[in-house]
Image (cartoon, rainbow, N blue to C red; front, side, top):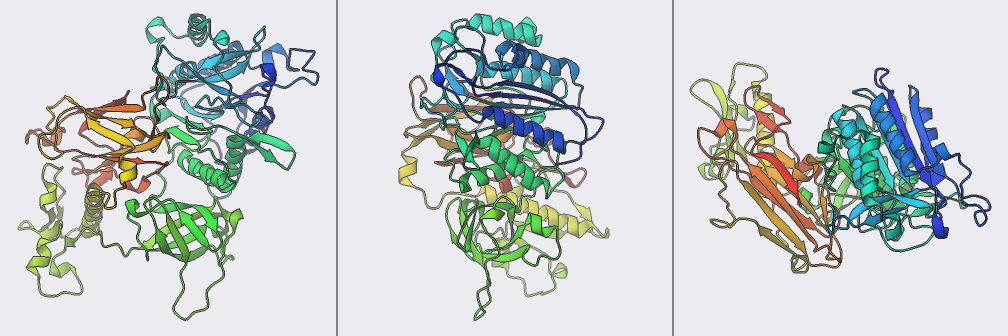
Length: 626
């Protein structure tokens, strides 16, 4: 873990509940927060302002109703609100806040509608003094607290080790409870209690169930998708822990040995890999900013060319990248154990692998070997999972973007082939002003690329970097499914909210809204990733940009939920194209039947003034979901 900055204080609120009414007890929640607390205190260079609320099952819970904790230490709604308010009032801008909940979750009805997940509103099931023995803490209450913290400049991380879906299955390993209307009869009083406790003025008292919080300031990691069940796992053959908490600590411990700071993105990827390798059926979800480090500072985006190894089977390893990511059979990778790489004495820290099989979203790699050579020993084992990363060295893909360079810039010159030149997407030329310039029809309705003086030493490397950026942009923009599945296509309907003028082209006036709906016809969730290819040569993941993860879950039809999502975008003409009067955005939608990420597809925009890439993009003012 990163050494903390002494100027930023650390705050932690940890809630663990084993004791629930009607013998719906859990076994590992209290130990979850005990383990998390020990980890944070051991690895933080500065003191942490810690609040722990727990409810332990009494030894004789048949004859007593109260847990052994004192009233102030119990995870009641009043105590949770009190501790949240304490952090809001006491912390300062730049401080880091960690909130951890381990216990039961449930699905709450909300004004007859469903929330962002399509499964209703999340409810954290708290302990409560009184006849019911439990109470609900609605997701919107937590969202209100997060909003106040983010608005004050806090950096917030939340981990929810409970069912996000409100699964109705019972059992001591499933962290879900059936919705009980008797615990929710005082909904108006709950709202008022939350408003008063958090100091929220009347005009700010409502918040959407979609947790509309500024994604720059927070990250939420949930134990599972809204359709899944959060489980407890057996540890050391005798103890139980929440699956998310256990693997979160395992991932933190492993990654902290490699990097001083652990980004939420790399942390989430490692947790998913570890859980899948252990046989867990749940898939943790991440929302919000992926680049903050765990309980630390803002990090630069992780390398987009390095891919985590997700599975090991015998002498084969698997990465979560396939044809849709541009991977082909024969591509070469180096696979490195990040832990071993810190020691130069370990000759197996970096090994060359070759893609032997590739599917739509996954690839199989085997150790590369020379012809007639003895097959090398496989250097890794299951214990290395979570620390292995594959970095691409070469590709044999025919899906390349061709560019033309002038003969004087190429060592191996050959007579100019006009036909071959005509197939190139871009040309790098030297114009009459003795400047490098990039030309090509692909620049239409786009930010004009920079020209640089040939006499400057760094001009050519900069132009080659720009060429690489634009070629990558056009490659992903032209990506299409060459082997469509009729079975998958029958599972959904995708409809634009406005009519197309010609063959998938939509004309939207400046300031108007474009959008589409997707309807799930399957009996299981579908996953959708949406990318915007903007006139500034930027590629943005619209789900991540609006505070979500890498993709959004489209639920199946279930009760009041119709299995439908709607996305709307307000379209504007960028200022640098205002004289042309129009701009072109490409919205690319990926629909899959399992969670898939496309990190390599995200590109920053090109800044023509500074000739350097930046992280801004134009063409889309805002987006929102229904």
